[in-house]
Amino acid sequence: MAIPRPPQSSGVITTTRQGTYTYAFSPINDPSGPLTRTQDTSSPWVDHLDDKSMYVKGAVTTLLGGNTFRRATRYSRESWKVGDASPAYSSGVYNNRYFEGSDSGYHGNLFINGSTVFGTNIPLDAENEALTKALNKIGNQKANLGEALGTLSQTVRLFTKPVLAATRLAEAIEQKRFQKYAFRSFRDLIRDGVPTRIAEKYLEYIYGFAPLMSDAFGLYEFSKQVSEATLLLSGHGSASRTQSRSDVTLPASRAEVYRRNHKGSARIKTHLWAQLDPEYGGLRAWNQLGLANPVNTAWELTPWSFVVDWFIPIGPVLSALSAPAGLIFVDGTTSVRSSETYDIEYWVKNGSARRDRVQNNIPSYYPVTYEGYNRKQYATWPRPGFYVDRDPLRGARPFNALALALTSLGNKKNEFGRLG
Image 1 (spheres, rainbow, N blue to C red):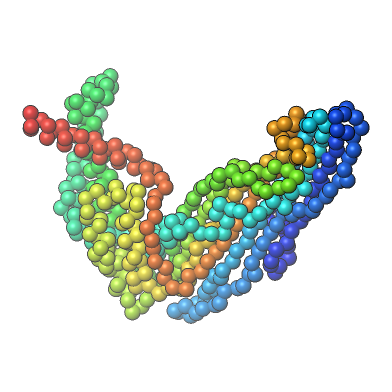
Image 2 (image 1 turned 180 degrees about the vertical axis):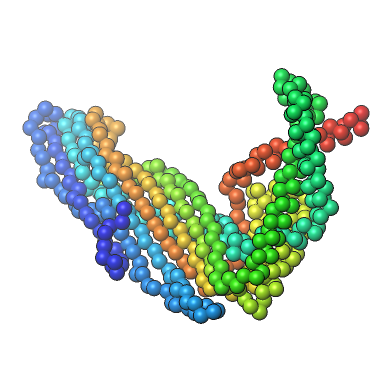
């Protein structure tokens, strides 16, 4: 959508079109009389605007080991474009006089007025999300030994149960013992505790067997990485946001102009680069094992903390605080790429005649599109911040929530039974 320009060109460039307003009226008290046409009035207006900041190459820095790295720089660009539309038209009798008017965008200077939903601004909440994800990726915490030590007995117990349960499940299927449940209602199954037992087995797998295997594989990968001399590490994180704005009336003397259906979406990305610090390599190893961040370990051991993280990811933010441990900051950026659309509803005015008192009115609808990009640079390690998860029940989380609810309901039933 951007206007083509030479590679080193910067600043604002535009294209324009002509908006013409015509107006005619009959003699007073003679609507069918000869029309007097006023002189056509034209006004040029910008229908495509492209604003590009000056592009400057980043400084080259020398990494440990002698390799070079070119750092990123600030950069921004914005572009608006107005689509085509037929001229607005209005005609009718008002105050015993016939009016007729046509307008192909005399007030087109209002169509692009710099109003945006996101524009080149980076939403703080989205930046915190992308930054937290990037920090955790560059921290590369694949084996959380600190948490495992705190829940070792529970994890081992949850690990062994699914193995036995899987064996019994295979035997039950082979003997067709599950056929008796096929024609029973969900309420009957709840009464007999069947979904509760299934939910318990599901949770044993999700929060016992799977995490233990993940940590075991993480320790295996970590043992391989210890011997690798990686000179440059990178971490990437992203977030997205959507938003809309209310309709707005734009001031115009010869027309009624409205901005409607203003919607925008933004994609935020964070990129971080770092080097291993040879003097603090051990600190990075401790951090990868989950032993350098006791606050995060304490949060992970808090009951139901993982459910809180579904909505406000406290755990990932605490984990990201220690991500730079044992690393040397090289470069970092956060960028936003936004796309927006809105419609310009354009009604022509016939002199002082109100639109609702004129018989024939045909408005114009001009589609307007916007694209924006902005990249900012970090001079040192950025700090993560809290954000709200806009999709807390994505993936398998609804099944996990259902299983947790069923097991909780089963516990309540047992308590009521004892009271009875």
